[in-house]
Image (tube, rainbow, N blue to C red; front, side):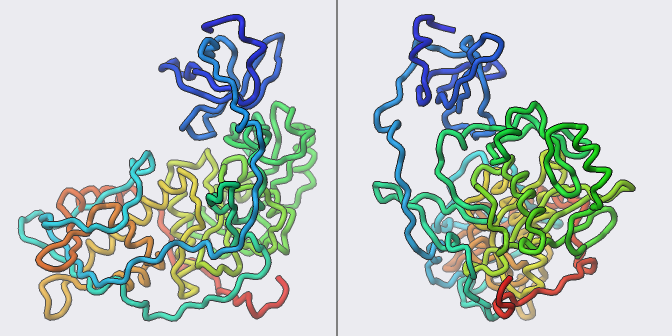
Length: 479
């Protein structure tokens, strides 16, 4: 600690340098809370420009109090939030015709469309490559990618959940990201910015939560919150959990099993018919999702829970929720792979399953925004691998020396929304301008990388194992 006479000045909203946990230098942080433990002051801090899951309690020894910055008066004034009705849809893509080809060499002039801002989320994108090692050009022509889709779209109005089409506006008129999905928006106050659960026990795992979740306040002071891995009921002690397990009749989520292959199953849970389970699922998910908030109105949503099966039952791996009706063609509201199962391919499996449902519905879909940082990584990687798998495996069209396909045809084959197809191609720098037309250019290195990435995906969704029929919720009256 640098400085000793400023303890009384450390209040919520102060900013000062804090020594990182690994000792790798100092980083500016904001004080969000304070408590006393064993006669020592502890401060809850948020590091500037770091994800909130890295927030932590620190002692004064790790704080450079000599560089303390008091909060400004403006920061102490709570912001008023208003709600204004709007479409919330993304801006349309400019209408122009693009012819795309695949080539082993790069084109002359790169496509000048909108690009996603590069950042940490770009690091895990899998890049492609080609089976052919010779130097001859394998070209893929993609004609008229911005043409109107040939398949009809069912845009039925959404019932309930008015916040689905709302935009939150600050005092200065600037818009905040839409916070929708299976949870209800709340004010971003100081309480919800602090983790309130120290540890949870779920089945054989003990997991340290990342974010705030509105569990009952009397449970937030416990060292461990115990959760039944089958019905997701939460209790205050190991003894209570043992008594509950003896009485709990569930060994799998309370819905229809619509997919099973090997030891992987998916269950469909109606948020209206199984309200308690759906609300408990949202409470659990909120511990690991920062951009979604509270959970009470689950009626307009379906929940698809992925489980691993063993002799003891079906153990939850992850889930995604989906509106029964979406005016903006969202096929996922919230999506989460629980931390013990992350980095094992389950995230891509959840995403692949959501698009398999969209194929059954005859629609294209997209996840609801904003995505979390890890969610964006997973979707970017899935979109990249899916599109590259199609482009690499295409054969030349009749009367042409290279394959020909439109963006709309790719969208219909994959059920990935056209805008996501285009943004992914741009993100991978695959679209170039060559001899008066736009072409897709794949290098041998990209194709090799893609082939290696696909070899690592051991588990894939098998459409033959899906037993599910889409429902027309607009004709069902009440949910």
